[in-house]
Length: 283
Image 1 (tube, helix red, strand yellow):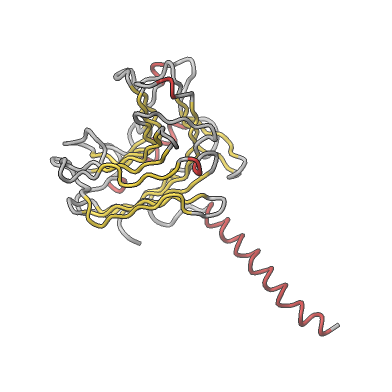
Image 2 (cartoon, helix red, strand yellow):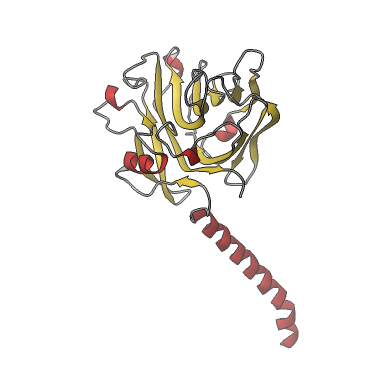
C-alpha cells in the first residue's frame, strides 16, 4: 500500500501541476493587463458607447447611414469557442458604402485618432505594441482589389495611404498579405509577406504587432492560431520607413475596408474581433 502511494504521488503532482497551469492560463487570458489599454466586448447593447469610452471620441467609421434598416454594423455577440462576447463587424455588398462619402468602397472600422488619449497614438520615436484576436468566416471571400482588415495610418499630414495593411487577397490560392507604403516610392516596400489565406478561415487567431515610429523604424507582426498556437504569419523588419512627412502621430485601425470595383467576388461578411490591446513603451 505504501509503495503504491509513493509511485502514485508523482502522477498526482504532475496532474495537479497541469491542472493549475491550465487554470492560471485561463485566468491570465480573462484578467485585464496591468499596463496599456484593453477594449473587450462585454455583452449586447451600447457597443459604440463601449468602443468610444476606450478609444475616445467617435471611434467608429461605419456604413450605418447607407443602411439604416440594418441598424448598427458593429455588435457584440456570444462566441461559443472563446466562451465570451466578441465584436461582430458586419458588411453587406449592397447597400453599404464608405460613410455616404465614397461609393466605390465600403468601410466598417474602429480607430484611434485625434481625440483619442495620447497613450493610444504613436508619436515620433515611440514604441507601440498592438494585439488583437480575429476570426474570418470559413467561407470568407476577399476581393482581387483590396480588403483590408487592419491598417496603420498617419493621423494627419500625409495620411492618404496606410503605412501598413493586413490584406486578404483573392487569387489562386487566396492570400493573406502584409503591405508597406512608406513616405515615398523609394522607401515603400510593397507586399512584404504573402501567405495562404486558407489556415485563417474559420479559426480564431491572435495577432501581435510591434512598432518603433521612425523614418528608419522597426515593424513586426506575428499571427498565431489560438487552437494550437501555430504561427500562420510572421514578419519582422528593423529598418523600415514607419513615419510620414508632416505627420504628428500614427494610429491603428481594425475592421473591414474593401473595394467595390469587383463586387462579383464579394459576399456579405461578418468578421469577429476581440481584445484590442494597445501598449506604449516597454513594461
